[in-house]
Every structure is written in C-alpha cells, then in structure tokens.
Image (cartoon, rainbow, N blue to C red):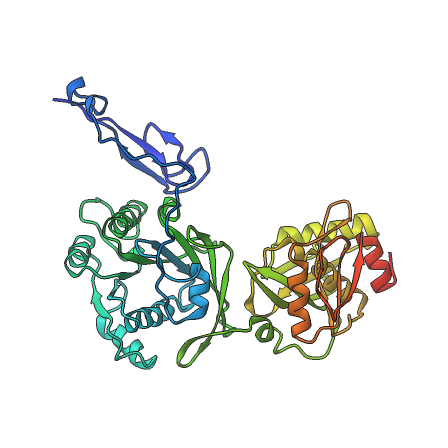
Length: 455
C-alpha cells in the first residue's frame, strides 16, 4: 500500500514545518500552521509525473480581448469602488468591524442588483431569514426580488447555487460556513480557507459573481488565513467610527479597477445613503479657525478629498509624554516630531501630542505630512492658520519638502469648496489651477519661519 506523506505550512508566510505547532517560527503568527496532504508516493506509473495533461492554449501580449461586461448596482459609490460595476465570475471579499453596516450595505446592493434584472441569492449564516426580512422592511426593500436563505452547510449552499444558477450570490459571512470534509470548527483557519476556495472556484466555473463577508480581528485585518485575500479578485474594507455617521468603503485590492478607491456613505435611519461630495461632508462641522485645525487636500484613489486635521499639544503631567493618533499612522507622527526637533529646533519633550482626523476618516497618504506638521505647530504656538487655506506635501528626514502627486486636482477641489490659498512644496504641477493663491516652499525650516515666525 502506498504511504501518504504529509507536511505542515503556515498560512500567513508559507513556511514549511515538519510537524504541527501552535506558533510559526518564521513569522511568529499563532494558530496559522495547517496540514498539507502530500502527493502519493506510489509506483511511477501512478505518480503525477507519469500522467499526461491537456495542452493549454498560449496567447501573446498583443491579443485583443473585449473588457468584461459590468452590471451596475444603482449605488454610484459602490460602483466606483468596484471599478465601474460588478464583473461576472468575480469573487469579492468585504471586511469591516462588527456593526459597521456590512450586512446593511450588501442587502441594499442585493436589492438594487435584483431590481436591475440580476438573479440574486442572499445566504445568511448569522441571522435567520425572518431577521433579514425585518431589516429589508426597515430599509424599504421588502418588494425586491432577492432570493433568501439561512444556511451554514457549504455543501448544501453549493448544491443550491448549482441548481438555481444565480448571477450574484452573497455569503454573509465566510467565517460561519462549515465544510463537512474539513475536520475543524467553523471559523477556523482550515474551514475559512476551504470555504473560500470552494466558493471562489464556483464563481469562476459557473460565471457567478460571489460576494463574501469577512469578520475582522482586533488589529483590523480580515480574520482567517491571508491566502483568502489572494484567492479573491477584490478586497473591500468598510471603515468608520460608531460615533460618526460617515462610512468609507475602500478597495485595497481590485483586479478590475483601481486600488485605494473609496466610496463614502452616511448611516441614516433608513440605511446607508451615498455621499456625492465627501469633502463638503467632512468639513461641514468645521467652525471658525482655531489653533490646531488645518485642512488637508488629499487624494483617495482617483478622488480628491478635503479633510480636517485636528491637533492638541499640552504639557504632560507624566514622565513619559503621550503620543495619541486617531486616523493616521502613529509611527509617521513620531517621525514628523523628530524632524521638527532635529531640523527646526522645536522641542516637544514634556509635551503630550494628540492628533485626530475629523469625521472618522483614515489617511495613509504621505502628502499629509505637511498638514500634520502645520496642525501640531499651530497647536503648540496657539496660532490659527487662515480659514481659507489648505495644506499638503511630504516631509523628508532631511527637512526638505517633496511635491505631492495630482497637485492640480487637489487645488481644483479646494477652489470648488471656497478655499482661496494653499501651502504646498515647490515643484508640484499645478497647471490650469486658477483662483488659488499657491504659496510654495522648499524645506520645513522655511515653512516654520514664514508661517509661524519661528525656526
């Protein structure tokens, strides 16, 4: 009898192990090591190398193919994030914090797709059918022709999808799916990987678009093995703070459109409504100019967005000063403070520094460096910047200011919202931006001296 060999690999980094252990020695991840069944070591006539496969068709790079047809949901912000609409045979993974509105958004999307003619099936593994119907009635979607099911058995779900042949299937959520051929509990690494693989394969094989809902960990990453994000075509994150009504749908991976594109929604009593002008929404609660408040002209995907950065600098009552950040990278804040101290001679020892991005927005763009520095200096010096001024630019470790991309689009968005001046690094292309007084600078020392009279 041929012996079957087995090995173990880490789902996070792919490192191979001779036996199972709770922690991967290569990357340090916990509970990420799973067993991989090896190929049978039987006689050569039965081995993989002795079998002949089918010849595959090869094409060259110049081959012309028609772009895939897209189905529009009727929700412009969702279509924007998807790259222009829903692509057949695509697998989409949507993640977000509990209660952020993932199920609400997808139920609204399912209703719009179904009303536009797409045969849609919504499978809930977390709620009973009656609970989903109650939400649909609250959202005014009870008459939408969406087929509904409450099931967690993956085999039964796939059998139903094979029989019904829908054009769109929504699975809420992938962590609740249970494959009876995998010996582990629902939600485990093995179960999530097996369920994602089967559903993604079904999407490609049958031409059905599949949307999977994924839970996130306390670090904000989608729970389960990272290989799930590699399997699917598109990964979307639904972001926002429960204390704010704003919600951001962000594409972090998209094989059919631009990554880092965002869609902005507002949570209301009747569900999620799309926001066509996010800049005006994020700045709607901004009052009179005050120390520590700066407007940053950013770019999210292909869309210019203006947001308010708020900073507070106060004497620290503790021996170790605090650095608290909401909506930005705390490591980058430490870098900005170090550059201000080393290159401009402005000390922050013994001072607590707090930074907040208003409206629950999260910013990862390096062009926010100069706006952050301006907000911190404004709070430290207790000097407010003019209310009609926007700031953007990247700061290098030498203290030089580096130009940001799409300067013209940033300035046009600022002009549209009534801003009359901008502070930016020298060298940015601002062709065609009229009506904005552009003040360009080459280094951080000059910026501090000219704007705040120090340096």
